[in-house]
Image (spheres, rainbow, N blue to C red):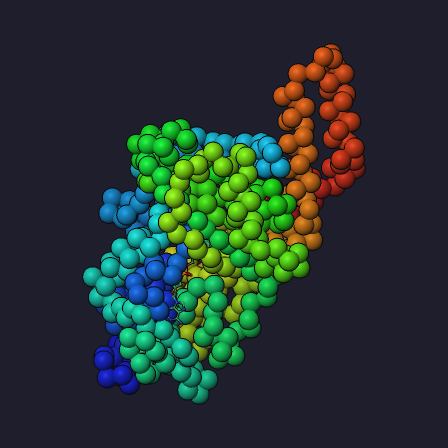
Length: 438
Ligand SMILES: Cc1cc2nc3c(=O)[nH]c(=O)nc-3n(C[C@H](O)[C@H](O)[C@H](O)COP(=O)(O)OP(=O)(O)OC[C@H]3O[C@@H](n4cnc5c(N)ncnc54)[C@H](O)[C@@H]3O)c2cc1C
């Protein structure tokens, strides 16, 4: 295997991975296990110190990379209760699914705190042989003859570090590739800004409020008034002794409507249906982060001479799935690097295997199946709100007991629906939805 000397004089590396998030750690772990000399760079004081997720990890895809990880990993709760709340101003239609089948191995979704999970995961990579430099920021890519062959770093180590190739996994903003002119700055229309608040509450209070026991957990997706009717989402996750509440909206919408995301969070927390869940809790962390939500059509070029881009840096997020796509892309990036080392050739031609693996896996297949969805929401910004409002108002009338016959009540409800959405519009929207979400 070819070895390239590092100018810092610290060591020689075959691969440098920028960013110890899920994608970067997976790449470094896979490479280290294959005996590759890999350097993992993290600008934060420890892996997980700068990352945010809702957050749940999806067990079935994760265990393909980390078999039976739940036995060893710092997971918080097994999510057995999945709900969606369609929120209006003072009400919510609640749709839910609870399954004790999901309380059994291999589970379905497990809540995790990234600050703890990433630290555990990075330790595995280090134990496997990866070298980790924390508080060390990659500032620029080093290019020679248009080929990436290292990075310039600052922080705990300073100078130029060289390698056969770089795996860029620096999260939502692929700044290094942008600076080198390899990719364009992501468009505002493809980015959403999220804030997350972590609220501490005693375990028994969480269990009582969410109807849980033991280490079972719940996740609630919040739509409609959760984002003041703007296209976006919110969610509540249960952890052992914390709740996580998130809300996010597209950057373009926030700018054009002059809305502040922290104000949306304050309004969501005060919503009469949400507030009782959080009551008495203490906010222990308040975080903000972007998510690349442009979908498949916004994925930039991912393969270059001497470099591949993985995880959020490559826009590999599909709806609420980011962690698994980051993990798979990290694994595929490592496989491409191993092939390049074997051939002694780090050119784009050899590294193209990375793209092929993404194409053949559920990563691109899943993203492709959803490719029209982000554009559809952009073109129909009020669609969600219109229907969520309608569903709430119908539910209110169904629940109300009027001093009239059921026939009169049914006709009244039909009139309410058709006044808000004429039959033709209802059918056209349904048809469009079927076409877009295939
Ligand atoms: C509020 C929120 C909720 C979410 N919920 C979920 C969820 O429940 N489930 C799910 O699957 N996905 C979720 N996601 C998406 C998921 O978190 C991301 O898709 C995933 O973290 C991407 O992993 P990554 O490794 O690509 O990037 P990140 O996890 O962002 O890691 C990038 C790492 O690179 C480091 N870095 C950046 N620049 C440099 C540099 N120059 N030098 C050195 N290090 C650098 C950062 O400090 C960071 O540690 C959520 C995201 C947000 C914001």
